[in-house]
Image 1: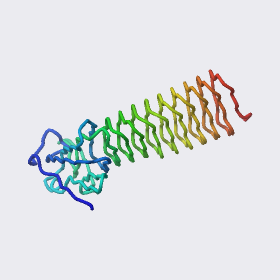
Image 2: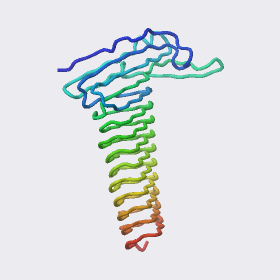
Image 3: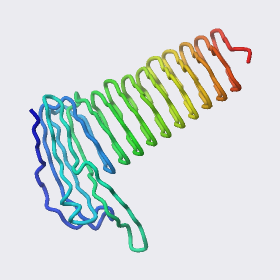
Image 4: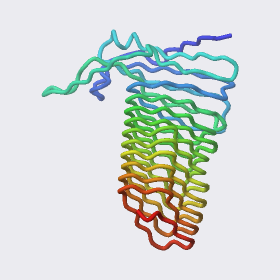
Length: 294
């Protein structure tokens, strides 16, 4: 059975002159118990989430708005079914317009500044659109990011992400699944095995991977892979560029069109099955080098 909980008002609303994009503000708090998986969808909001040894999700929210009317529209709620809990930022569809001029910043806006303390064993399902989030010390992460910025670290379990026109930075995590990267930037450092489906007009950087790295398709993008305790496999490169270095295993490429490949310090073999007009450069390959004639 679904249950709806509304956050209580912790502090009264008032005029906040210190932040020009928070002309009117209010504080909310919310506590959730027995949460194993938390779902959160953000717009132009801010989030700081930290895992701890506790067993409750503690939410502190600062509501910011351009007017008292917009402030009154903002609500913080939770919806729970079993062990899956949705933290709701209401109304879900909020249009924000920011303006600046000689007399400061204005506009018509309403947004949330969230601080969450959660159990370290919790899984987070996060959707961010034009917002920003900082995440630390949780068990797993599923992320959909569009035109926003997310930084995550100390994620013990798997990470799944889809990034479009956003920036995602991940450090000290388990295995990573990148479903798609389009016109955005993804930086992975000290992670487990990495499996990426598609990179299109984006930039993917992988440093210190404790496992194999694989990519299905690279199109008009860039990938930089270094310090891999395993092998690297890229199935197809059209017009993008790939640079691979310091790999203990093999570096294998399926096909390249008009893109470029640079491979350095490869512990195993270097291979390319098919080649168009693209270029391949390599040095310090300990195993065999197998490249097509053209």
